[in-house]
Length: 313
Image (cartoon, rainbow, N blue to C red; front, side):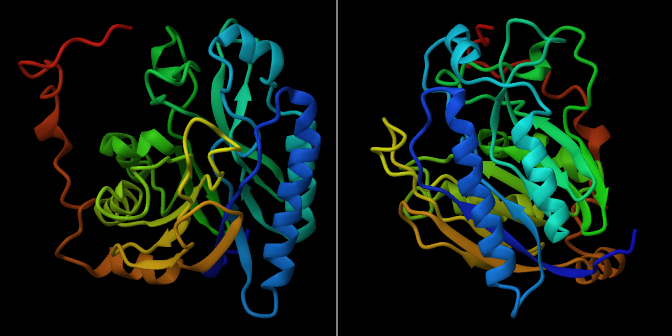
């Protein structure tokens, strides 16, 4: 596998209504594959787009209030017909696609639904990431962390020709420990698949979207490619979705960002692995991974601070 030391990533945000049942997935994936074509072919004269990232709920959102309804109407196993279509498209263009999330069922874990994104490359399905931190209390899908006996990697990192890639979903990014787990696993490109709603979007005074993307890039000495949901409130009520999809470098510089506001948009920016690796190799200061003292924190978070009630699991 020959490394590609410099390429472009595309953060592809969508503005589509949520299908009421899984029969709508085929048409939906067709729209997203068209965005892959537009990104790779359209920017071809200028850039080699090798990584494409789609937002959370790009396929379907948890629009029903119970796990039973989600399992009955929207959830699908992985792999499936749609991931096969992504695989064929990835092979056609020689690219890597971080899918928007599927609502996933797995016979190994009966009775639950996962919120899952897949990394798919020319050779097929490389990894699936199941959201570890659901956005409580609205999201009723399960965290793998909470399932007794769960024995799959919770924060997988994949070695590819375009670097070591690790993904997490939306609310996960408000927990520095989650993204640090990817960095400790070797991730050089951190991928955020997100449906981040107003007022915590990409504009002041509460531009958490921008704040946390930049902070996670800096503290983990890695690129961030973050695709956010750009749906209008009429498409995914009750919230409005501010978009602002972006690419951030390892020093927290915003390399490209979609204008705030709903709408389908594609932004592209360079991922320079050679520069990242050179900086990781030479820096003595602000090398947060090298200076990390994980053992100093061990056991410090076992007890809840006074005034914070226990979680009702």
